[in-house]
Length: 479
Image: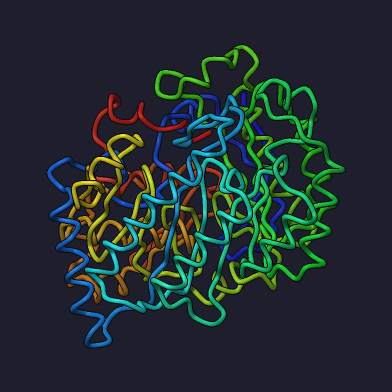
């Protein structure tokens, strides 16, 4: 007995009509929890031994490099944790409140955090990318968002042509609000769609109409936003392959520049709102595979380029261009056009990267504010990457972003012999090769069209930290 999905995509992004034919035994083997690899090592490997002092040292090392012109521009991420209502599927760090006064208080602490960064890095650090996420950044008023953007522009040097993006909850948006965001300099906007089916929306407590999105997307296009993104989730309660195909068609009709398609991660033991979702209403593994296959087929059929794992883009979008030019990378927001940029993360729970280090801020407002009030960076855990971490990160990111690992480039960059260092991993890949997920020779590993469905499973082969089933249960399931 086998399970089939009718469409796949080649690593180069071209459509390929190819059936995914995996036995139930093979699907069961692949349907395991695994990381999304927005970083390697993954955030669950961060340690509390990396704190404020270690983060300050990483900033100082970057400042030394900046003085001799040896570092690329910064990326900035600001986490706004507030939402007016809870979406049951959500796994983000969020605070549900209708008290708008909390936004102004939060911005006071953001300003303190920004001032501490400027003190270490120096003023006028160039920024090529800025993203406001959440929660719901549009929980803040337009005046508050304007004040935040003014703070960031005074403290950093936002470069001409920089990517300035914001996540927008359509239920908090309007034509006027979009015009104000454009006036603040935002040139990229992301709308949370998830699913248009009314039954699914009720099951996840997020009701918003197609007409609402159609109006907002049209206004954003008229205002000249360079990129318009729509977020979708497959695997939600009451979702079926048939209902999700309707959502795919509706999103394709909206014609956003980018589409982010995420697999729902049901982890109710970690995320309390998910306990309101009935497990019996969740689609089965083979249904989720079909949804993914239908989405890939549907979006490619409407002219989108499959960027990888969870992103699509129109051919002229910067993400598709970066994909073609080999400049694609992944960071804590997903695929990005800034492959080597350090990421300064501001706000509660935000995760950043400076040099060969990762860091995460305190997850509660109380801890976050307490650290800043004492003149400490609110970093509560992080990681300094080892030589082996950097090597494996290069391999995993090559798989996730380009769909192949060329041994020679890895060997030249890291001064290793791939067949020797990864002898065990190459042997494990042979089983995936027999399943049709990769092709290998003595020069490279290439992800097949079918393999893109299971790219996380392929990357996991090179994850030295992922040793036990207990550790894996922290992640969402691959299928």
